[in-house]
Image (tube, rainbow, N blue to C red; front, top):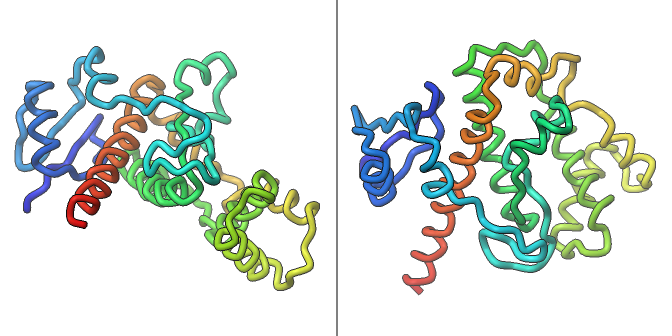
Amino acid sequence: MAQTKLVFDNIPICLVHKHRVKLLRDSTAIPIVDHVLDLSALSPNLNDALWPVPQRTHDTCAVCGTTKEVTSHHLVPREFLKHLPYETKLDILQIVDLCAKCHGIYEREANQFKIKLEKSLGVVTKDVLDTRLMRAKQCAGALLRYRDKLSLSRLGYCLSDLADYFGRYDFNTLDLEEIMSKPHYARGQNRGWLILNRYKDLERFALLWQIHFVEWYLAKQKKMLDKACAE
């Protein structure tokens, strides 16, 4: 089945199936050309109607509905938010509740999208992403924040990854805090700042991430519904 690519400001966001494309095409009156729906000329008053951000409950995952290990996810990643003044940050701050599992799944999608942003904006970082350190930081953060609330499977996964990073199991809180203070990158160049500096329009940048998350969220919910109906 042919899928249509959503594009915004010349940046490819994601592929969507025909049922979703029809709604977007009819709502925006934007034609599809060569399986591409370019949302760059989108009317701002349609943003929240077409990509509604799930309301926060603070205790329930917006995707799967579980109440276990619920975390806060920033639609505009903190990698970018940390470079903005407090007042500006509040203007584009959007947070949703995701469980640790769904959060991890979306973060992998978000990391791939950041790579697309780099390529589309012509951002070149001389730094190499230290994926081993990044995994260790994710596990260290989970232990520091939710130590007593982690499921046994999640706890085992975190301890195993951290033992692999340290080369030992006898690490302590100070070790975990030291990991959290390290940058993901082997050298000093910062991808978040470079991308923000190139994009400039923060409202459109925030909308870009809103579209990316909500399209993923809707596709995930449809997949779960289809699976439930099949059973």
